[in-house]
Length: 298
Image (tube, rainbow, N blue to C red; front, side, top):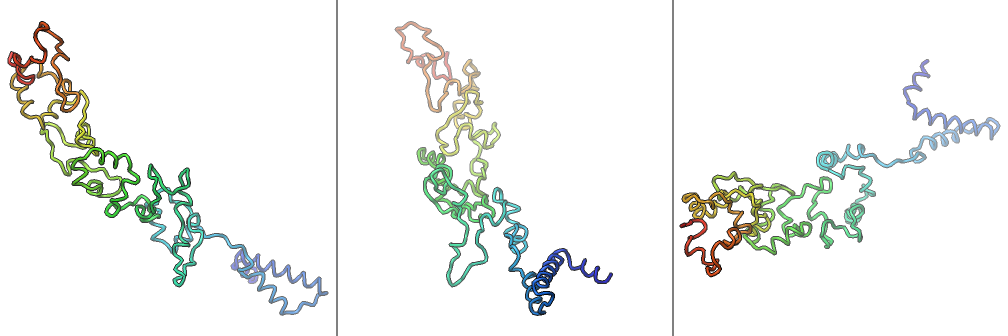
C-alpha cells in the first residue's frame, strides 16, 4: 500500500518515465540473458527521463504573460485586433545580445501581417512607406496613438482632409494644428464651442449645427440646406434680419436660404417674380421703386 500511494503521488508524467525505464531493463535482460550491469541501467534511466528527450512545445500566451504581465495587460485592455498568440509576432525571443545590439533584427516586422496589394506596409491612401511605430508607438496597444509628436504625419493617412485644408485656406490651416483640435487622443472629434462662440444666440451651439454650414476642414466654404432657419443667418447678418422683422412683408416669411441658396449669392428678382411690368422697364431697376428686398418700400 505504501508503494502504491507513493507512485500515485509521483503523477502520470513520472509513471511514463518509469514505464520507459522498465521497458529498457526488460530489453537488456532479453539481450544479455538476464545479466544487466547496474551502470547501464542507470544510464538508460537518466536518458529516458531527460528533458532533452522530450518534445518541446512553443510557449502559450498565458505562459508569456506570467513574466511579461504589463505587456499582457496592455494587450488585454487595449490590444484590439492584436489580441492573438504572442508567438505569432515574436518568432524569436530571449536571444537579445547587448554586444551584438541585435534588437532590431529580432523584433517582429509590421509588414509580416500588414501588407498592401503592392507589398508596401502602408494603409489608406498613403503611398509612402512610413515607420509604423512613428504613430503606433506601442504595438501592444496599436490604436493608442499620442497626438503631440505626429503632427507632420497626419496627412499621410488622412489625405482627403489634408487636401481640403490646403485647397481652401482659412485660420484652420494657418493658426491651428491637427493636434490642437484632435488633442485628447487619435480619433477624438472636438466640439466647435471649444474655440468658437455661437454667432446666433437663438441657435444651440454644437458641432452638428456648425458643420451643417461650415465644413470643418474648409470652414469658409459655407453651404447649407434650404431648410436652414433664418435665425442661423442672423448671427452674422443681424442688420438684414432685423429689417425683415421690423417691416413684415411676404419676404419675412421666406427663409434666407430660399433666396440665397449659395452663400453670398444675390438673386435676380425675376427668379421669383417673373416680369410683372412692361418690357420697357428693366428688371434690374426693381430697387428704384421697391427698395431693397429686406426693406421693401412699396
